[in-house]
Length: 136
Image 1 (spheres, rainbow, N blue to C red):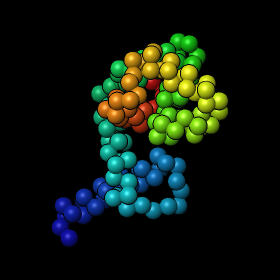
Image 2 (tube, rainbow, N blue to C red; image 1 turned 60 degrees about the vertical axis):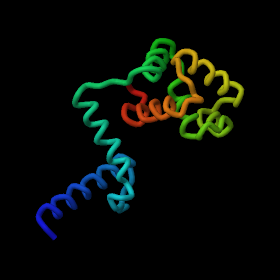
Image 3 (cartoon, rainbow, N blue to C red; image 1 turned 90 degrees about the vertical axis):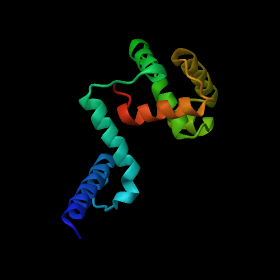
Image 4 (cartoon, rainbow, N blue to C red; image 1 turned 135 degrees about the vertical axis):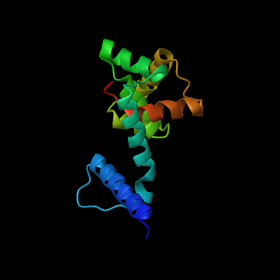
């Protein structure tokens, strides 16, 4: 094994450990290939933080609306995306009736200007949720 390979192996191990720490998993091991994408998201989040980037577009509008009105539209969106659009599952995650959840989806689409039928729009907000969280 070359010195460059040793350095790369060490960097991969550090990245895998960081992902496991972020997950809050203790006493578990993971190979870098198991956590590769999560590691990339953490790296993107690091760059965004270093450059003082913030959420934009529909996600920014939803966060601003939540902060201004005490609503939970960002949490509703996150539950919906995490449940792959299954309203019953998503509604249960945020402890509301499915009809209430559907109303919230309609409102968040209106307020955020978000087309939930557009896969690129869903991906964009999903990535922002993962990179920035709901705290911005």
